Amino acid sequence: MIMIQTYLQKIKMGAVALLGLAALVSCESAEDISRGLDHEVPACTQLTITGNGQTKVIADSLVAKVLWGYIPKTNLETMVLPTVSVAKGAILEISVVLSDNDAIKTVELSQSDWLYSKYINFSNPEGDIPLTPKSYTLTAQVPVPSTVKTEPEIVKFYYNDGSPISYIMTYKQLTLTVVDVNMNKRTIPIFVKVE
Image 1 (cartoon, rainbow, N blue to C red):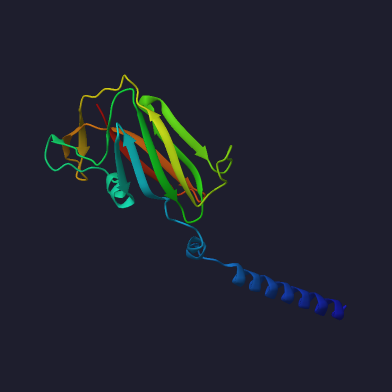
Image 2: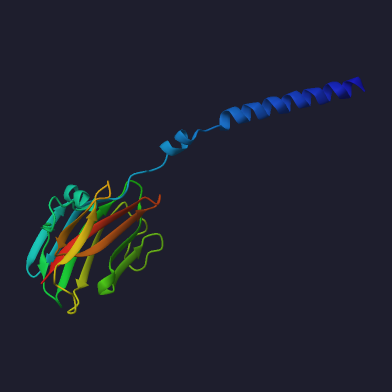
């Protein structure tokens, strides 16, 4: 009987020691886990817009500034952005070089007022589209509807303190949304002037 109790005590001490060792080894902090993941949004290294015989190449550094929005300085200031002018009913050509540290999951170029959308799912590609590439050149031919309004719009902008200011917007905006396999999302506005 004493041998059985001694044997059970050894098993209990061994189990406790094994559980303690497992708990010590398996503890990872949120910081340790976070270090192993990609937190960077996909990059847009080059954006090329072509329309009406004009071509404009916009570097990622400028796209990033436009991404955070245009901040007007004076009331009713006219917004001026680097882009091309395109006629109603013409074709706007867009080429953008995208890249990511891990891989690109989805890309969507859209303009809701024009009922235009081009969506690519790299996780489940069709045709000659690669499976989750680290870089990809998206090309699109966007038809500009003949019914597009060309009149400038007055847009209200609100500063961080809540005070408003108005500026004149003479561009139409397309939106490029890029998501990587870690669900980091980047939204890139693409402005074009319609005449």
